[in-house]
Length: 111
Image 1 (cartoon, one colour):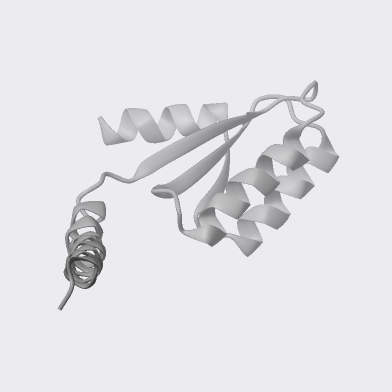
Image 2: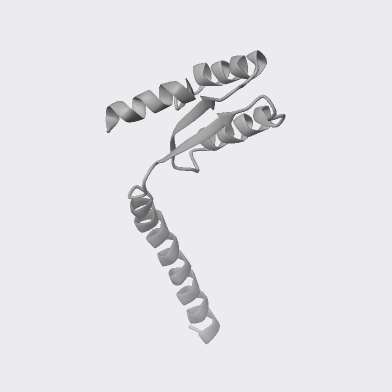
């Protein structure tokens, strides 16, 4: 066996070892991450709300993020914005529409 053959075999073994290490160990470490709760205020002046909701929905669908809950907080949203939020909440169970007053009550009760 020549030196180039031995070097090639060693490189392949190192790459395979690194892939196996990442496959098993990195996936175990990923499960130890903490879930996030995203709060998105809904304002009448926010013209980019549909894009924000689509982006968060894409993160949830991909499963690449650790988002566990998305709170859509109605501050002074328009009827169209609130209906859009309701549609997203119906489709994505991780999303919840609430008002600022309801959120305040929920937080007081939990403390």
